[in-house]
Length: 310
Ligand SMILES: C[C@H](O)CC(=O)SCCNC(=O)CCNC(=O)[C@H](O)C(C)(C)COP(=O)(O)OP(=O)(O)OC[C@H]1O[C@@H](n2cnc3c(N)ncnc32)[C@H](O)[C@@H]1OP(=O)(O)O
Ligand SMILES: NC(=O)c1ccc[n+]([C@@H]2O[C@H](COP(=O)([O-])OP(=O)(O)OC[C@H]3O[C@@H](n4cnc5c(N)ncnc54)[C@H](O)[C@@H]3O)[C@@H](O)[C@H]2O)c1
Image 1 (tube, rainbow, N blue to C red):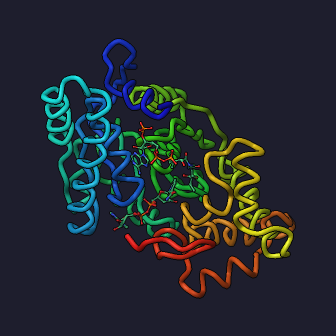
Image 2 (tube, rainbow, N blue to C red; image 1 turned 60 degrees about the horizontal axis):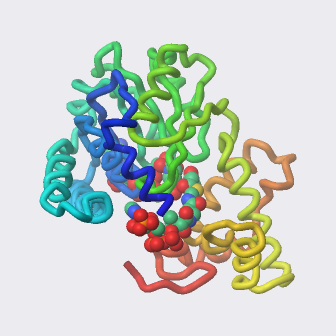
Image 3 (cartoon, helix red, strand yellow; image 1 turned 45 degrees about the vertical axis):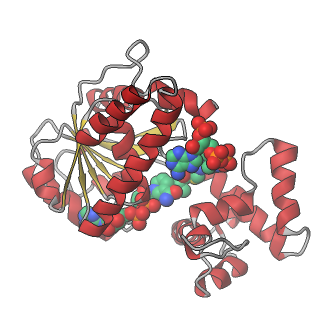
């Protein structure tokens, strides 16, 4: 029910926050990009969703339609015709393209949600910097990479920041707004208002590893894996403990499976390489083993638990 509140706020005219940003280009049509496109379109913005794969774009449009339907069913439960109109209009605001450069030409804001790889992100932003209008703000949804390092390849460093959403995007209420070393006040303010306009509660973060949430969440998940690895408690009991004893919606091992064990490992390895003296970032043999066996969590059908393959 709490989730419902925030979804409704996305497009309720009485509480909607206005943003000067009207045209948003979301690059990467996977799990996060499709969610970011959805909440933007729900909030009345013109969205261009870009992916290198047209199959991914078709899948994204389908899942956005399904998720908008979920929203409509709840918000317009007494007025199904209005609900259908809401879904059709929101979907109508999303166009899809496979060429990021073309999509950036008309953007006020570009939100990048592509693969978590510095080189690939650099290549993309370098290309976009040459074609996007000078007023266009660039933002990355990176989970664990440095915003300053991503921004290092563009000229518009003052118009570059982080917009870190959480999975599932339509449900999770937080947006971390990351100020890089050179992000100027106007860009920061524009990112904050845009975040509010898409229904999120925004917090301000510095460009430190994991910002706020992942800096706390990743070591917490890792400690749970280590606890399980030592044989101190079963996976089920660890998860029950944190749900019933600490009020978390998911236990840490369920959450690790949900986020993806490969993603957890990628973040940990990256931080370990950069900060070898921080014991919280040390590699975890059990995590390495599960990933090497292809046990990546929900998406692969098995991690700490078994799942029906999607
Ligand atoms: C690693 C990265 O950088 C950062 C991250 O993203 S870290 C991960 C952050 N995410 C979390 O911590 C998630 C923790 N888990 C949760 O909050 C909840 O378990 C959950 C929201 C995922 C699911 O909630 P749960 O009550 O178990 O399931 P369910 O009843 O199916 O869903 C609750 C609501 O969310 C909606 N929902 C669930 N999954 C959804 C999805 N993928 N898309 C859209 N809506 C969804 C449901 O429709 C339902 O809406 P309602 O309450 O209005 O009816
Ligand atoms: N999954 C999460 O829980 C989560 C949460 C917050 C932030 N993030 C971050 O968001 C980003 C995306 O994560 P995701 O889980 O959505 O990944 P994903 O694999 O679901 O989607 C990434 C998409 O980007 C596309 N892509 C790759 N290179 C591209 C390019 N050059 N141009 C256009 N499209 C390209 C891929 O085809 C793929 O569809 C990553 O930086 C990740 O760290 C992920």
